[in-house]
Length: 151
Image (cartoon, rainbow, N blue to C red; front, side, top):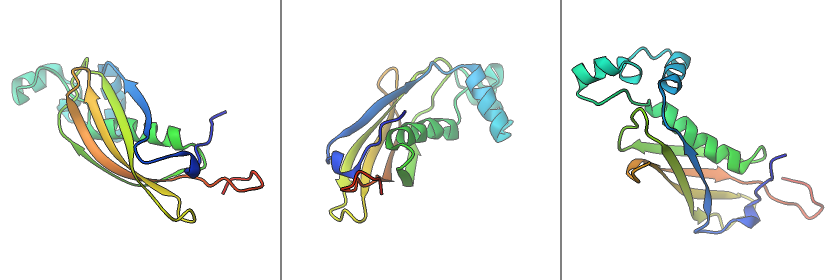
């Protein structure tokens, strides 16, 4: 059973546990492209992207990387938390064979416990520590009531 993170347990400056994925394979990108009905060669055809895009190999879609980032956040907040808002900017491609490492740090916290939100800076990096995305999100965390119930 997943542990619940409560609003009163987090502080500005705290980090959400790091999440790593990879290395990126053709199976990952083909499954995601199929799910999205995305037939762009950019996500599965090595020869095409080398010849037409000047890339060394295919890349992960931005939506795939964003889904992995969101999974990190929602796994951390658990079933009683809520992802209120997220903004992501993709800064560098993820190529076949690359790993992805997602990080989040709490930068702001509501001073009103009746509105238990936190803001986080988000970052994704590859195996070379190169930034692949940045972002910001707002999460709602549950409150722990005096009688032990969750609000």
